[in-house]
Length: 161
Picture 1 (tube, helix red, strand yellow):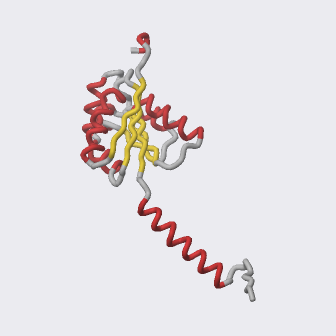
Picture 2 (picture 1 turned 90 degrees about the vertical axis):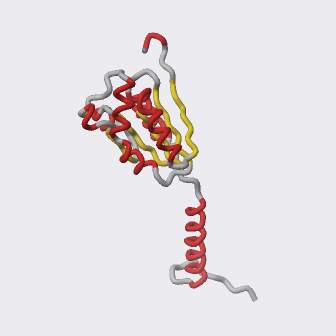
């Protein structure tokens, strides 16, 4: 004789299935690859906004910029204002050296945001100061943390810089 199970809450069979599902989810969570996507500067922030707009899932989006106003309007899970003391949130003024120094100033905060990652994608434009200057610093930090680090950059048109 086949025993039928009702699908009502309180059914011992259903609660057992739910418990197994929870255990399976925990096992898979521990085994899953932790991916972070870091958008640096205005170009990187634009990339993150587009990723969010089209619904890309599976990774944490982190925006890093020296320009506080641009960072405010970037749609990311976490944000880092690079070089608070150096730039006062006013950007790098298309100067890669300022972008680099800003990232170095914010090194401890960058490490906190990137720690625990298995894979880090870094995206930026190479036409301004923040992306051009800060991306090598951020990628170096990511590499030292042991994450597989992948850069995706856009080169500006000749008239852009």
